[in-house]
Image (cartoon, rainbow, N blue to C red; front, side, top):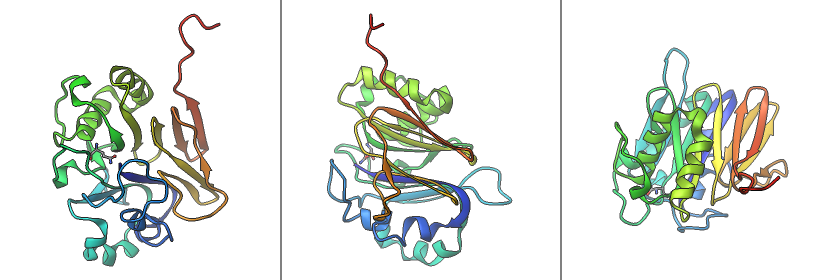
Length: 236
Ligand code: GLN
């Protein structure tokens, strides 16, 4: 299972988010601390971010492990952004190994990362998926329904495939949306902004673990968490 993170707040360097922390995504690519499925995340990595003077997000993806990308390490300290989504990938068995199968996926306005797996047979046919990987089909479905429907899509897909794990992380440049469904997600809220991450990138006690089956929204005004569990039928 992959590891992903997002940042919304004051612009900061991609190195400070992805490479520098003691348990950064870089370190998580070979030594994740909380990963339940898979041991290393060496099947590619990607980062998408909004930058001044450009309408949609810029993206850098690779089918190589993050530790094998010295060119990124050299530019990451000078790439700065206030809205970032990044991921390292541990491919699900049977899924394609290629750059286009690596998160974050985009439709030009949104970025989306998926930490988990889903039976592709339960997904409705979608157009414009970037790859045949389950995560790209799921991303195309979310983009087609509109990220506002993120919670509904996760509930519906989760009902159709009870074994699915559906931790999603999406951003549109001014807000983050995330779900927890089968894996961990933590949040760090500071004066500078808010980070969401599959696992904390350091031991700051301010990190909080978000409950499973939640919909998480982050705006410049703060973070809200809503349960995705519907009351059972007939409940008062
Ligand atoms: N199923 C996705 C893939 O194969 C994501 C895998 C993951 O979360 N480890 O890339």
